[in-house]
Length: 117
Image: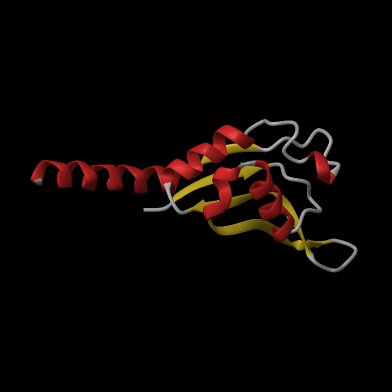
């Protein structure tokens, strides 16, 4: 089962690729990122004509443990976005609600599996 965490307040100009690179560089635990999504506002455009970030995104990880380590390494870390000149834009990292439900199902399956062995 995959773990997922929500990260809020990256710089509004940050691309998906930059977001992923920043996350990978800041925490070795993030090498197993499965998917990156920055939520965009289709009604607002930047100078390049691209839709603007709404200021939050999602990272999906291979495992819950990796997502937990990302949360610990990145959440409210003033250095996480320093190279992007993102003064005052700390990442706020949380588990997405749907991931908690998936985690509970996964833990229940592991418990049942352990009981049958």
